[in-house]
Image 1: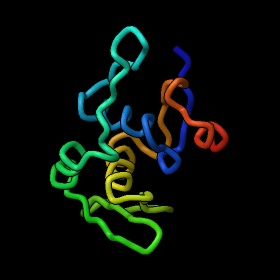
Image 2: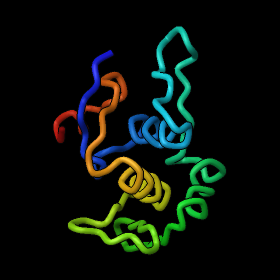
Image 3: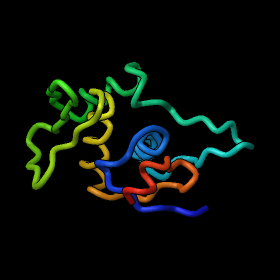
Length: 119
């Protein structure tokens, strides 16, 4: 399976959900394919999945007009603070940034056209 490097700040949708799922599993999550059901937990859209990450990782959220930021209390950020179009997307990016860093490898099948052009 081909893996592509993506900046954490550019992760979204299935790719971001898959990386968060991998972090939560403590290792690489199954890669969704037609034969295995293709389901990835939707941390970025389901508060019952993504919401508990806020408490688990001690994340502070700030809601601005066009975006949200999420920071882990006590973490020093050099450069840009994780943000997203929604609080859940920002939380997920903050978790990935804290646990894996500013760039991660994601299965190519999960990359959207927008993420591919940013990679």
